[in-house]
Amino acid sequence: MTREAMRRKAKAVPEWLNSPLWSTPPLASTPADPYGTDFSPPPAPSPKPSPSVPPPPMREQAVDSYAGRGGEIREEDGAGAALRAHLLADFKAALSKKVVNMGELRRLACLGVPDGGGTDVRPLVWKLLLGYLPTERSLWPYELEKKRSQYSAYKDEFLLNPSEKLRRIEESKLSRKKELTGERNGLLPRSEVTNEEHPLSFGKSSLWNQYFQESEILEQIDRDVKRTHPDKSFFSAKSNQESLRRILIIFSRLYPSVRYVQGLNEVLAPLFYVLKNDLDTSNSTSAEADTFFCFVELISGFKNNYCKHLDNSRVGIRSILSKLSQLLKKHDEELWRHMEVITKVYPQYYAFRWITLLLTMEFSFNVCIHIWDAMLGDPEGPPVCPRD
Image (cartoon, rainbow, N blue to C red):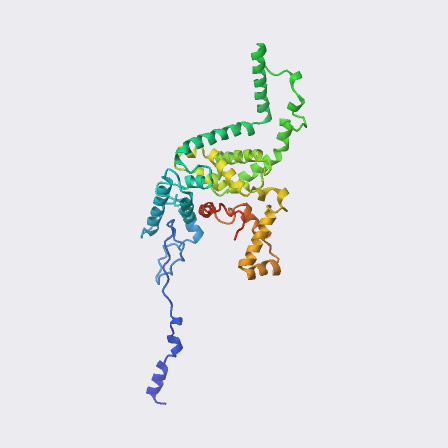
């Protein structure tokens, strides 16, 4: 073979190597995130990276960093900020109407409630989505005043210890007696203290007996409140812990069918965090009362999941988990068979916490807030029950 022929043979390239399948396609552009946070994969490093440039953040780090700065993201291209501003304008327009269109508000919430821009609409949006506020704007001041006054009455009724309650009862009795007989005011004589008012009474109507029976629940609430997101300074503040504690105690006493179930503190935390951080101080100062009623509205939709005596009923948690299994089998039978037939991993092993705690323990706290935007905006309400 001549040298020229050998050179031509060496230069020959197989046709299959020229196929476009072997060429690297250009990277598709990623749409801008509505919150201004870039969740796209980090770009490939340049041939000569600078040692002083830190690596790009991971997805969760980006979200946490974004939320930690109060939603103030400064992007060079401004695409995310522009989209966020446009979405914020849509929310303001929807909330400014005399009668809020809930269908429109839910549609917007499913896109995500924007942060930053000097305005935070999320507290108001959540109050409307949960049904705490009526759709008619003119009724908002009246409803807020009424509910906040009602919560104050709940605190007087459910948070006082038996000694204080009995003292008030005695004062009321003596006051009435004084009005009738003109006698001097003083302590109730020992002979007039009934058995039901005695600290050692076992009577069902005894305030002391009820107090001691509830002490175990109170201790559980105290423990759970103290370990609610200990990594966040907001929940470590004593005043905020006391607010959470009062809400859970009043709820447990006002709704004895549910009482307090371990984990309800995790469901309460996002609500209180959002409402307490309302930029309107007239609302943030009353966040405890507002949070209580929003919490009641939220729990009322799936309270049966927490009632132990309903576990085996058609409305209990086991029925809900069974529906989830059926849906998984319907939409992905291969995965269902692998999990429930081959490996014996049933929904109660992985989905129980998803349903009862509304995903609050599955994602970082800041990501959970954005998930709740869409969850509360669901036209059928929070997806506490699996549905097709």
